[in-house]
Image (cartoon, rainbow, N blue to C red; front, side):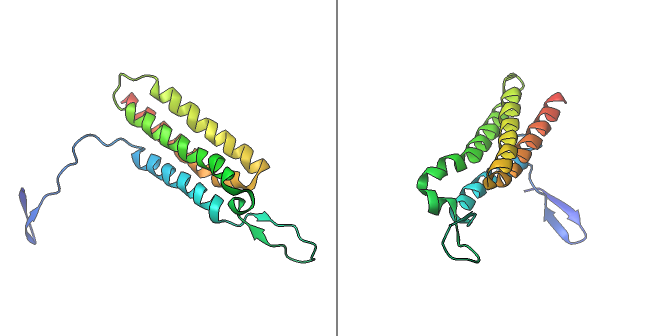
Length: 148
């Protein structure tokens, strides 16, 4: 390890990571995390009211508790789209693959539009909006990096 002279004696210098890190890598990673979060919220968050004959506050349950495992498929769509966009952006690091940016743009904007429509019609859509925004920003940063 190389050492440099400092006020505190010989200190090892940090090594550079091999390969070039693109802007938006971390943002695409956070989009994957929010996609997982949507699945967790579908299972745990009591978002639907259970109708009863009693007056007063009605009990709530998660959509997984009320509708079963069938809700996991639509709830997994943000995670699947985030994984696809992240993989496409990673594959597009080499400049020869010109198809990657249009595919990433279409997928991220489609998810964002579906999230806004889902927010207006279903309550779960509001939890998908951050994934769509993060994917759109990651795609924009990847496009800027490719232009340089």
